[in-house]
Length: 194
Image (cartoon, rainbow, N blue to C red; front, side):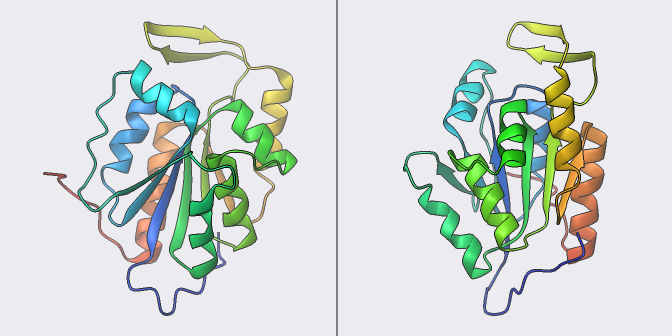
């Protein structure tokens, strides 16, 4: 992620965070989101359902802007063309989202912001959910074992070859990638959202 987007003329470039319909480490992803200043959140329709299913409080800093998947053309993505974002994070990313990103399909808000970030060379971090042949993941009623399909694992590997894209496979790796972006941009974390 060496290419830096031209941010001249933008008062406070922002983090963009796309939520997909995954419950895999959803709570942990929200915790990391709460530490980021100047944040915009892109909530896909599936993510809105997950927030309700997992009974999560969406208590973010007061300056966080939330964009919901309500337009056919995903109108909020236009801000990528004007240098509003220095980083996009897609976390957690379902196997469906990863497969669409790999295939170049941008038919919802999450996949559309990924496409626009790529087209404008905005560095992107993707926390892929399906990364091992056997995994434990949290469902609304507790932990379950899942067996990602070969195609899911192949798509995750293919996404790792995309320019300006860092694919992470654990919460710890997500935190490390976010911390690296903060350090590279000389930005401090938020220590409290109150």
